[in-house]
Image (cartoon, rainbow, N blue to C red; front, side):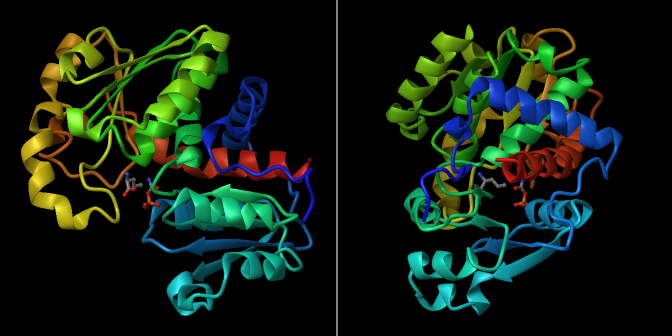
Length: 312
Ligand code: CP
Ligand code: NVA
């Protein structure tokens, strides 16, 4: 275990300047997929899944391969981790063999424990609390679509839907770091964790942005440049499907959202999307949707992050 190792467990594990560096590198990787090969050898990167995934699995696997490395994808259900082997013991073994550990899991405390026992960088590929790699991709896609990373600061980003989920929390921290005005519109029982809102407000004050949390869709979205949403039922919440469908109806991203947002507003969704629920088909499949570029940027942004971590 070392104290110097840098991990990426939540969006504010990097500074604003470091976020900018990673986003610039992500745009560069889109132009040249083989720009850097930090894992040439090849060195292995463990990519562990405790929950389902399409984009994260494919983008990390492809990304590690393009960085010259070997993507070691582990389904935890078929590993000893899935049978209860301690996280710390898993970290102690993996750090001797791989160059980085990427993990999609449940509680944030689990990935913190992995990082505490790993001398190799640990990257959060989604927990119940945060999805920071997704927000790097989202910011990079918006930057690319708007002429560069300089375009991000000052934009108003509105997220509507489940304000208590991983995406909402990561937009708060990651958007604040980018100097954005971040608004979250969510039902009263699904507001973001107050500690994360406070952290985001502190970052926003330093970076010239702001944080607004409201229970009104229209207050969040009016005049926004970027409109974001996510599934109303995250992985692990499936037993609450019926109750959630009743509560979230007023937070759908639809034509009305576009009508009250800024002209030329762009729409993000991390996917998978449920058309007719959190977003209408005409919006996600329409001209203001950035979701396919956003999905592509999972590859470029995570390569940038891994290459950046490998330099530390
Ligand atoms: N957006 C995202 O993380 O997608 P997957 O669940 O398919 O990885
Ligand atoms: N909030 C969603 C994101 C999926 C990528 C979930 O956790 O299921």
